[in-house]
Image (cartoon, rainbow, N blue to C red; front, side):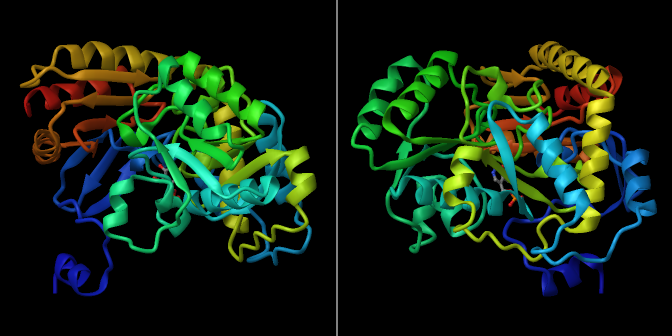
Length: 392
Ligand SMILES: Cc1ncc(COP(=O)(O)O)c(C=O)c1O
């Protein structure tokens, strides 16, 4: 039986598989069992911020001396070290981290914290967004999912795009009744094809949240750890999140992990009541991977962030030379690149053609989504864009 046949028989897939059997990943390339190499603009959907096979991180995992498991209610020095590192990296007053296994769990925890802290049950989020696969996360995501899942939570309010100054009036009227526990969003909405909210909107949102006692939750599962050209995308705006969700690049792809970080003030009120037990949250292997990944990110911060800016320019220039069949809107924030083609089928066709020619990418509805790693060279980026040119 071939891998594909066995996969079909035994392996649960919520989404159809791409026709690629991976045998190796290195730097900006993925290698298939067919002997072909693929330029990786997909970046594991935002997991691989440093490229694949970073020696320092692999060594830390291979050579790390650690217990096989730590029961959550024990002390463990590397947990404290990681929590301290996250507090130092995080914007504003965010200080107390909770152990999570991934992004969905972090989002659930953030919603729990916000509702417990405020005693309110409504949540406001952005229509069409994605925050994970659990019932709470799906409930605050795209409303069209309600057709498929009859059991999503009520009391989830949605704000339509665009996120501009004019939208603040609606935000104000939704929050004024003081029934909304929190507003949750990605500060740069990568899951909608890199939608960049207007600065006035974000500043106004922060202000209205403060006035109405509504918490501001930033879901930085993808945007965190440099993706948009700042350590956290919240830093692009004049805002102070009360809770921030982290996942994906927290280990640069070497182990499953998430985190939710909040302020001392919120933690003081909910910390000893909320529970948030997680058997595998911050497993010792994942913690070694994360500490090494964050150490690498900080040690090479200057070079990496310069390259992110360089990549933004390279993609901007390269994409402007691609003859898409219809007008496209290109949205770039650091190493998050969205090309809105206003046609979902066209976007998927390009993705499929590109894969056959050795370029991997993602699509978000009608947008192409490129999430290159921060060490990708200009040459590799242009090589990928050349493939893209031949697919449109
Ligand atoms: C913004 C955002 N939040 C949450 C999640 C869920 O993360 P995970 O897949 O680790 O559960 C994702 C995953 O794509 C995401 O993009």
